[in-house]
Image (tube, rainbow, N blue to C red; front, side, top):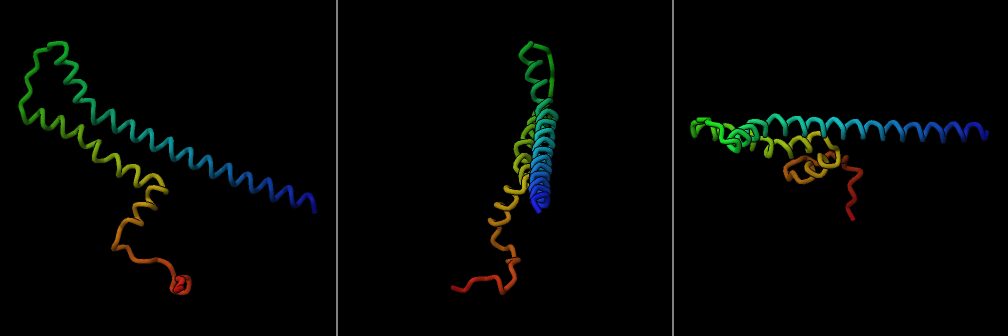
Length: 113
């Protein structure tokens, strides 16, 4: 009987460790995605500013400047959506904020006190 207790305890800790590894993997993937998107979207602006700071003769139309800045601002707009789709706690909070979402609880579990 004591052997069974140790087996259950070992299994419990194995499950906790696997869940922890899954969470760590999810966080690492999200950080790589966010960092990569940051680098791609802000690179044109950074390169342009670097060239301007070195007094390099560069001619970009006003529309080109707006496009470069729009690409950079896309990151600012996309960032919250990345976190909302990748992290379960953020997703749960956002889903609770949606007023038109149907209640998924069965009727017998609703407390009428």
